[in-house]
Every structure is written in structure tokens, then in C-alpha cells.
Amino acid sequence: MKEKLLLAAGGVLLSVGAWAAELPDFTELVAENSESVVNISTVRRMKRGERQWRDIEEFFRGLPRQGPIPYPRPRSLGSGFIISEDGYILTNNHVVEDAEEILVRFSDRRELAAELIGADRRSDLAVLKVEAEDLPKVRLGRSEDLQVGAWVLAIGSPFGFDYSVTAGIVSAKGRSLPTEENENYVPFIQTDVAINPGNSGGPLFNLDGEVVGINSQIYSRSGGFMGVSFAIPIDVAMEVAAQLKANGRVSRGWLGVVIQEVSRELAESFGLDRPHGALISEVLADSPAEQGGLRTGDIITEFNGNTIDRSFELPHLVGRTAADSAAELVVMRDGRRQKLQVQIGELADAEAGEAPRRRGGDGKPSALGLGLENVPDAVLDRLNLDGGVRVVQAQGPAAESGIRVGDIITRLNNQPVKDLDGFMAIASSLPKGRRIPALIVRGDVQTFVPLIVPE
Image 1 (cartoon, rainbow, N blue to C red):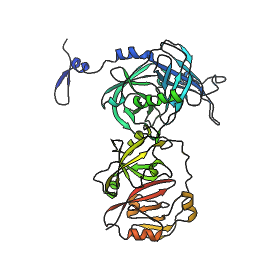
Image 2: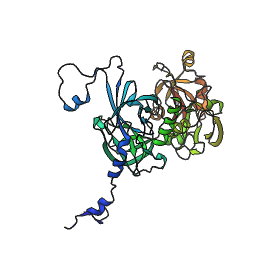
Image 3: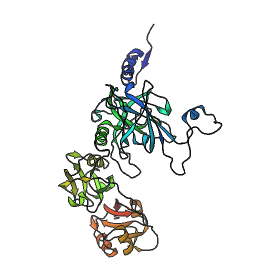
Image 4: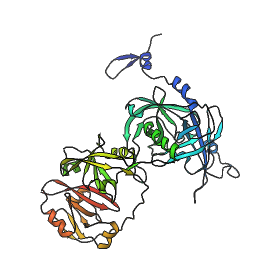
């Protein structure tokens, strides 16, 4: 029988057999590693006002159940994998969060109760322990060596279908996915591997059968897989797991700055040749950054020899730095490159500040398209500010730059603004037709905007 031919994009004819030979065969990889993957189910504490979910069997049957619901407390379902022969298991924190009971089911259908050794919300990781010996553990790879475009494979329990296998490629590395607290300490691996609820906590394998990531999140508008999924790099995960096993908690480095991305407009306003680095919009009081000489308006371009191209790269590096260790930073300050040494602190939980109420109104207009007024002392005290002017009108260049009514401008062109007269004095000497950085306070957040100075 003649082989069918496929017409390639460049007009090259390939046989079906030759084309198929280029695709990986996952059968051996799955056979060797399935026993190291586990199913995790939990019964967790009810939160006040939370409705009771029906069991997963009823969900799939799609039939209304007559009589009382058999599970009076919420159950969650996820995946995990064995990292040591004596029973340590790695999974996601959100799989076991608030759990009263944790049950681990193995490929041979054994079920064992698990103890939560430690969990970390910032990285969404948890370490479990079951009483067993000689368990089949996974082989660990290096996510640092993973290349974009490489084949990867996931094993897990999507929607409760145990030991489902899906495959795809690495779409990107170092993705930033901030948490609800606007923190980001995980440089996620993005893949197009089909991941759905129940896959959480399961392993992501490379073609050598090594775990390179932990499937954690999906991007979806429907609740189901849409071709974009994210995994925690195994290098990061094992650092967290080691600390959880040893101490039950995770210690992270802390610099004490609020940063933002350097856009093209901000790069121009700060005199950079291209957008790069992490722009400091606030230096926290009594922080390692303040003690190390960092200033608002500095742009961090290197941290311990690592180049900072995008701002979200900095928290990853700082978080993985040991507390009480020295770090060398390179910053751009007033257009000049400077080196600073900072003693890194330890990250602690932060309390969110209260956002002050804002009002509109009339104010003294400026040539920048701003109506301004002095900030009441009570507001300055509440926000812990030394000075500034409040925006009551924003039009023209100011509105185009993103400044809004209610913003408080505290720095203009890297000069501190004390009051309305001080603002006008600085504004009178601004370079025409250029963008200059303006530091504003909006709510309880400080951020730079590239303000356009009209001709």
C-alpha cells in the first residue's frame, strides 16, 4: 500500500510515517511514572455563609438527588506526586487549604490519611506525609534547563478522572501572575497542556521522565481549559518544600520597595535608551532598601549579577535570597549607573492600608492641564506624606498621561513637591515637548506616570 503524502508549508512532501516519526511517544514515560502520581481528596471546614456542594458523582450524572446530601461538608479534589520513598508528597496549597481531613489514593487503589507538614500560600505549595515505605518517587529535573517549545506531559485527575494524561509544549517561561495581595514570587511556566480542575498539584514531566513543574493554574473565561495553563517551576518548588519539611514555614528575602514596570514613555522620561529594569515608586520606612540607600525614582537594573529586564523579575530574585545576606544592586539614578549593597531582610505579612476618599472641585490651573490644590494636613498625616499637591482637574496632557482627579503628586521630574508653590516652581523649568516622571499617590499606592510637557 502506498503511503499517503502531506504537503508541507514550504512545498516539501512528507510521508505520514515520516511525519509521525517526528512526534514523541509518551507510552513508556507514562508507564514508568504513573505510580508516583496520587489523587488527593479533602474534607474541609465550612466557611460562614458557604453553600454545600454536592458530591462529584452527582455532578457528572447530572441528575437531581432525592433526599439529603450525603456530604455535609465541602470536598475538594486534586493531584500530587511522591517526592520521597518514606511518604512525602508535594501538591498545591489550594488543594488542601482549610482541610480537616486529607486522603491520598495511590495507583493500586490504596487510600491513606495524610498529615499536612507545611503549606505556603505565596507559592501555592504544600507538603504532605503518609505513613508508608518504599513508595515509587518521581525523578526531579531542572526547570531552569527547560526550553520554550519543548514537549511536556501532565498526569492528574481532572474532574476526578484519575490518571488522565495530557501533553503539549512549553509556551513561555517566567510568567508573572500576581496574587490577590499583588505579590509575585513564582516565575510560572506557561504551557498549552490541557489542565482542568483536579489537575492542580499534579506533576509536569519533560521527555526524560523528570518532573519540571507542578500544574497550578489555568487562564479561562469559562472555567475550563482554553489552551493556557501555568506550572510552578520544580526548582522553586523544591526550595519551598525543603523549608516546609524543616521548619513548617518559608523564609523569603525582603527588600522593602514598591516597584512598577518601566514603559516606553517612562523610559523616555527617565532618560533611558530603552524600557528595562524595575522602577521604585516607594521605599518603605525602616526597610533594608532605605537603610541601603535606595531612593524613590531609582531603577534597579541588576540584582546579584542578574539582569532585570522586566519589573516582575525582581521579586523572584529577592524572595529566593536568604535573609540577612548581602545583595549587590545596580541602579540608574539621575541618568547615571550606580552600585549599592543592601542587607536583605525577611519578608513578613503586610497589612493593607485604608484608601482615603477623594473629591473633585476647582483648583489653581497649571500649563500641564492640571487643576491643583494643597493637600490638607490631615490627609498628609493619614498617608504619611511630607507634602504634595492634589489633582482636582485633569485634562489635556495630564489626562493623556493617565493622571486622575484625586491623585496626589509628590514628586515632579525627580524633585520633591512640598506644596502648590513648589509644584509651580518646578513646572516652570520643565523641558518643553518631553515626558517627565511624576510620582503620584492613588489610594494607598504610589506609582510613576510619564507626564507630557506641552511645547
